[in-house]
Image (cartoon, rainbow, N blue to C red; front, side, top):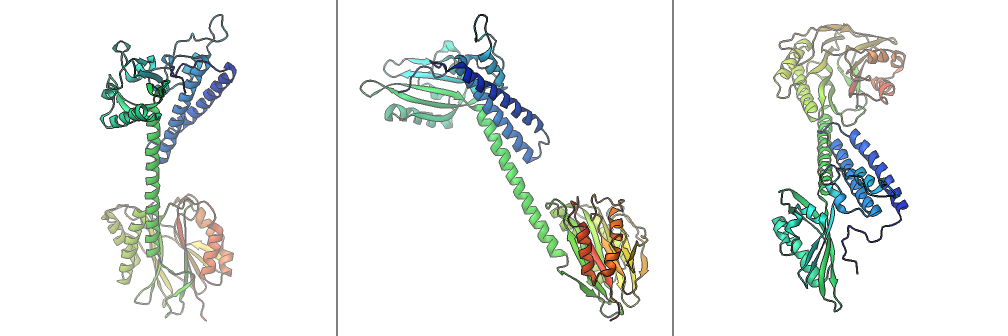
Length: 494
């Protein structure tokens, strides 16, 4: 039968050395966790960082609680020495427990410092035979009840308990007194100062010699801060899980939309069959280092009704569903205007106007080429995009760019058009600016590395071999943005 002495005043304190060591270890660990908690303070809008901070807060509260209990265990400190506000401090309890008093090896002379309400523990006994009630000082503090008001009887207790929790308390007390069951449960109280606290109550009946319940004793612990921290962890974890679910869903939609819009062909395709110099075309999409960054890059090759071939690559700003949906809209419009016979320069102007009036404003770079297989000429226009690279006999150079600003940057922009003659055996490389690390339009690192692949392009049997050379050069490096590359080879007469 457990003693019904006040549980927060141990009758026989353990050896001081072992508890001293535990207090020191707890204090040190608390400091380390607190340091991690301070470092975790960052973007409060980030669910992951909120979850990490909440976990740290919970760990600190639990260590505060442990330090308070060890401090009382070490020196038999009354729980009234446990601080009264909610700031949380292991050192307050541990230092009080370990402070040497004059003329003694250990004593309690230091005034209590602020600490955590989490560690406050009180006890009570209700004598059913005499109706006598005994409360510890700490229990008065937990309930915010002046000691001169006296302890509360079991009948009076529910008046301070939340209405929704009153059945919980009444059920525990009834089970204990009638069925002899131990008490173990929580309920919320409204203190006399109006503050709401969560109290955890444990206890057992005390039986007389006849086996009847003579009294009931209980230990009540204020766990408000602990439950608040646990709730913060749950809420931040749920928020993080929702954020991850939304992110995965958006990425799946973006990937499906991208795959539905970009040409489904793999390997080389031949365009402009009726001309003396048909085109062999292959392309590849290279994702960013973070697979979650599905952007608005595109490539396309399309045989037009008049026998010409449309070749285009582009890149819209942003990532996710917004970028891929805007890309799908833009690419659909581009295909339609090209089929209608609109030339590349005018086509760029219409795309610029389309982005200006779009519900989802965006900026984009693009290049549109129209190849005439009879004249063997490439007419092209660009909007803030890297120029095509032309390789002939193993040597490459960038074509001179006609004027053209980013799509969506300026209203009424006019786009010039350039024309280049292509010869059988020529190889053309079109790419977006995310191919090299950084994706800076003014950084020509990617172009220079592509030009260095000239000897490999000269040995390529077809356009797909040229794409393989590009992927081997760029494919494994950590790009900050996704990219597309298209290799176009003018076939030699058979």
